[in-house]
Length: 225
Image 1 (tube, rainbow, N blue to C red):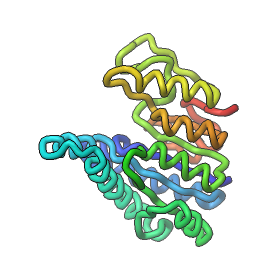
Image 2 (image 1 turned 60 degrees about the horizontal axis):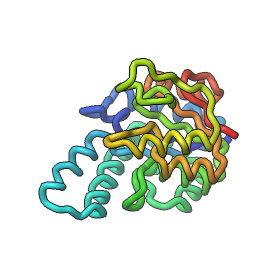
Image 3 (image 1 turned 135 degrees about the vertical axis):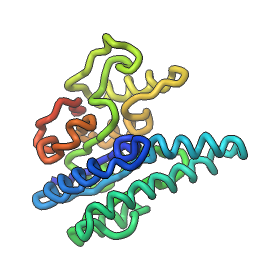
Image 4 (image 1 turned 120 degrees about the horizontal axis):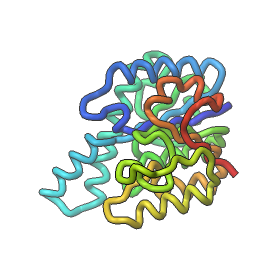
């Protein structure tokens, strides 16, 4: 299989870099790459949001602030590259075509953000579509897709299996609420829907066992037709 992993920045770097977790992720990715083709997109998380918030003091330019976030995603990506050692391509990939070339070299391409206005969730969905990946695995700080925000609603129900259309609907509802946030943003959800990309959305606990996740053994949400 060809698999794209979308790893949230807040999972890798909750406040400070989670060195133990990054090391475990690297071990699992190397193990998976022995039998499958692997590509990874890393997010900016809380650190990126802090920098963007600070930048608001000085500029209203949203595109400029997006570029700040992109730089943070690439710094996080470099941490994972360091942990992967020689198995990873040694530089952060910034282009989908280059990611394809790196896969042909039997290396793991690591990406961060690419363009203003696109989250790393959207980047990972586009990368999976471009590479014609068999599977997209989204690792986030919530352990799956819920019918409402579990951080605000203790009665929120986790959805074990949903369709592409349902993912788009849930993502759109989350973004329509002030301060709302979903496990996948609406743009990424639409790319997943467009590309008909089978997707697993899992939490950090499952991410310690990515080798099992790609076999379908996880407690997250499966998104498929």
